[in-house]
Length: 140
View 1 (cartoon, rainbow, N blue to C red):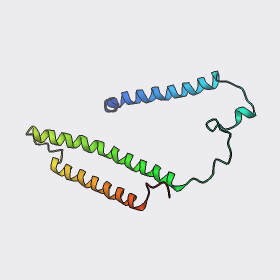
View 2: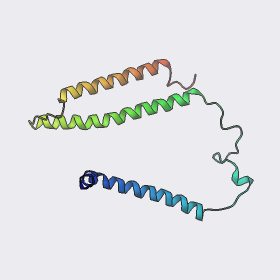
View 3: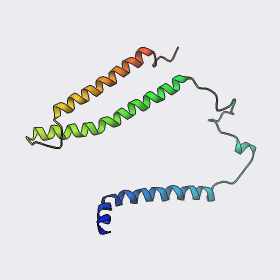
View 4: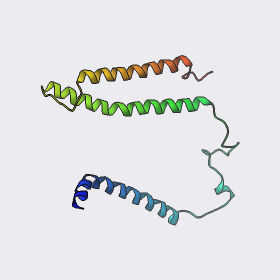
């Protein structure tokens, strides 16, 4: 049992922060329900659309360009998330090489640079393909 407690020790602070976040979120929801206004009525139950009265159904069709832009944003956002750990490993490998150390657990800086260049080349090919398809033209 002590071995399990020792193994979980690094995660105790994370579990503590998650517990505080869940407790605060639940407390805010409960307090809002208890303290919040209780007035009801037709005017209060209407959906609020930025100060404008709702004109038509909210489930109408949107132009596909909105979804394409959202997907492109997610695509490039995920690519930035992938680049962050790559940059950290590249920095460690470069620092180890500059210090004259041999880091057995790290690939060489040259290999990492080629891998990063290949990744950016794939990004560029995808970007040019989207550009030629007219994804970025809103006036069509």
